[in-house]
Image (tube, rainbow, N blue to C red; front, side, top):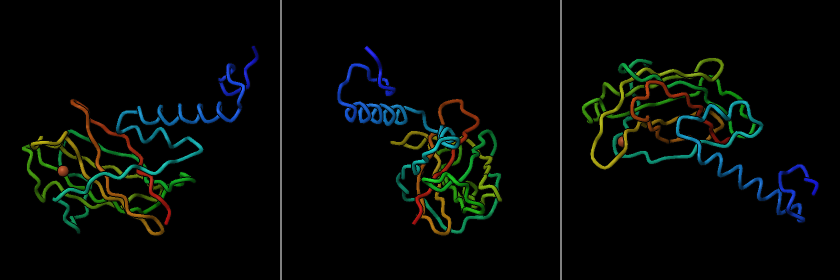
Length: 170
Ligand code: FE
């Protein structure tokens, strides 16, 4: 039997086949580990980063800085959904627990992405606090885009996270 180019040679209904292929793509994306946002960079579509809870510890106007600890580097590009275009100067705000599991002002930062939308934060692996997996909070904003509040989840032993934040145009 001849295939139809969508990997569904057994299906007579072309639409059903396309839908099945699309769903398979969605599930493949959902199965990607956290921190893999950079894989979208070279793709035609650029889905917005999923929001995640702000939690009770956000404090605005953290100092502008790129180093708030040692042992974990987070880097990537801030992009606009759909076009995937980098957003120069996008604002990133970070907050997280210190290695002892407490939120403190030393582990807050504000950054501006560079002229190509890139950012880099050097920090510590957050300590555990009850009821949550290890996580960092981020709030990313840019003119013409909806502000994104989300979290990143380092895996045990992970020292580098490469992650592109993708914002929804307004
Ligand atoms: Fe938290």
